[in-house]
Length: 116
Image (cartoon, rainbow, N blue to C red; front, side, top):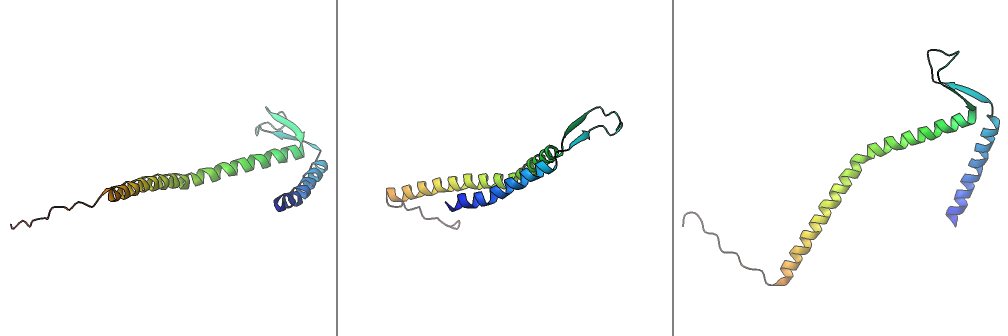
């Protein structure tokens, strides 16, 4: 219940700010991807300013998420390796416990010294 209230308290003002931003930035801007001919660009797009800003923010979030994911890949690999090692050690421990509970331990033959 508290989580829903906190979410509403955060999302409602955030939505109002986004709507106010979009209404205030409705003018159309031309984005050119041709640095050599600004008068007649090979590719240009005309769109509202708020759409351009939202696209750039989404692109930035995706790029930042990808960079974080790639940076954390090393730690995920180490965690998977440790988990496999842990699993192998637990299996070995279970086998050892089963061997010990199966019967009395067998005596090993006494070692003789090389002088004998």
